[in-house]
Image 1 (cartoon, rainbow, N blue to C red):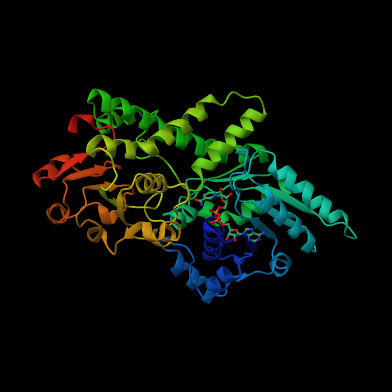
Image 2: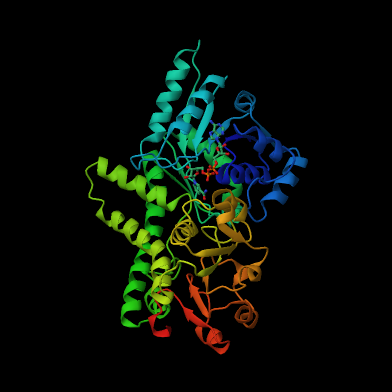
Length: 440
Ligand code: NAD
């Protein structure tokens, strides 16, 4: 089937590439000329495991191409996916300017029936707004041109985006009539054949499903972080509590980890946008406000813990492992590292950092204020403390003997509860985790 995908960021590029991989003919569209040139050469502008190889093979197979020319893309596709950003607006609501502008532009270039598929995360009612924009744009054109608007939110995780897209837990499709439901069924039939469920529902339920999912995941994180604070006060171990709680089948183990707070381009903005939607509708949104408040506290907890352990941070040498908001991505949007770096630099600490993928973006923000290393060990010389912020695999089994010999201090602050305290103490290091009071 013929598809265009407007916006080639994390979601759009993965969507375009994976649909091509499934055998569809796909054109990716972006306003960023440089990005389109790089993509056309087979270079992925973002770090995502498996993406570049798949991009190259589908380009050379002729199923995938990229352009800045929306008219060519719309005229050569039945499905027009909208995958542009929906950033946080000033009042916390999702900024829909890009989505609505793309919808109008698609309408201007339509020469017959099209399915406009909204893949961006958008608040309930946005597909109705898109329909209205398209109808208004078409009203200036001679003759009738038919279209449908579909909600098809994306649930991929950065760092595992290709895998998640090709083997999703589920695909959610919000439709308003049987004609377009049939077309979407055909589009996603390769996924169904591979055993992945596709749920059809009304458009508004589909739009809300995305926000409800992200808000519930953020709630689980903040809940465990809140419990971790109690653990620290009473000497309990949050990892034991997690095992006990998660083994209840009604609850389950995944996503019950205490840490240094959630970040990224989705959870913070989606929680805020859902609070905005609920408040506008007169629904009490206190639960999610607390989820945000716990997360804000948890991001600052690293600085507080450091002050508790070593006193004023001015002049102290702090080595950070990790800058991306999670492993296997170069994305630093709303990452805890930003809060920690701002705090450390603001308080006069000397900061060094290593991250396998996020250092180019961090360098753009912090320049010479941070000493960036070439590998995990190169940031440790003379460090008073080592702080783990992102649980990349490269940090999982480090050489503690080497670490002890490089650092001038002995403190390791494990912001992701990755390490075995007894192992560190065998090497003369002092380990502090999140909510594992009994080990500190
Ligand atoms: P992104 O910022 O990485 O990419 C957006 C792309 O759209 C950019 O390449 C930009 O140049 C392009 N663009 C902007 N305006 C355009 C226009 N008028 N025409 C063509 N291209 C245009 O964003 P993203 O992370 O891919 O997120 C896109 C949407 O998907 C958001 O609504 C987000 O909430 C949602 N989402 C993101 C993730 C994720 O993990 N990143 C997961 C699920 C859903």
